[in-house]
Length: 345
Image 1 (spheres, rainbow, N blue to C red):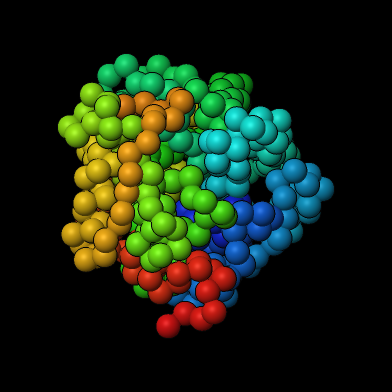
Image 2: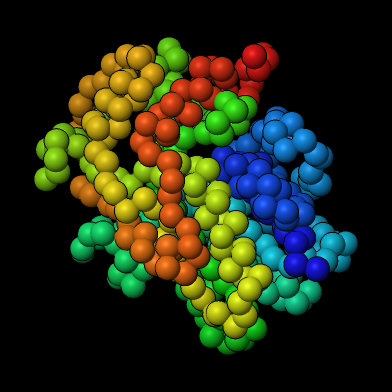
């Protein structure tokens, strides 16, 4: 049976959108999440979108005995591993927390998978493993380095996965290196709902637009870019979710692939200011902003070569910046307080 998939962190932003696309593609999923940075309401809304209930286990990847019980109970074909802490600033302040959760938690998961001979693995990696890129666009063979503990935890796991695949050729591991996920499901039912002040640009823009925050701070306007602001590869979260489905389809049809890193991006760079103006133009809502000093560790430009994903997975991003802005606003305007909003209308 090749359609039973364990999705760790499946209630989070990217995980919840991926669950929809997995079910639409005919996969049978079990979601495992500790709800530390997500809301069970997201899962309920996913269920309403797909029109079926989803098996859910509230659990932590640091809980080895519970993971063991789950693998004893279900016969999985593969695991998609989203579960992890992801705030760069917090990782600098609390590096031990990040290494314990992201590295030790993943080791637990891999050990249990090995014990039950489940060796198909899709890992949620990050473009942060490239550090400050030497050349653009970034290809999968580019040198890797990190500027913060969050990125370092992702890179450490990649090294572990490479060693594992080298030691045992029956492992099939795809490491998906995301660039900058934004947007929301077109229904407006699910989207990005960060705790406290957002770490990422798009939810910051939308929270200013909805009046939750006063103004946007743009970090640096003196970079060597088109308008002085940082350039990033923004990708719609639904395109990203479909990239996971494409990776799973690849695992269904291929064996002994070892460790395979694949970029998921659009291949185009968009500046912070360009994104702000696109949001204003596509929604008709004003977003006051101010320029402030650069943040330590930020790079001027970072965008992917998406050619390998197209060649190998027959996957490419379909949705553009206007789609990303429109869908973000659809989510934020209908859910001004995120999943704690009184009701969805």
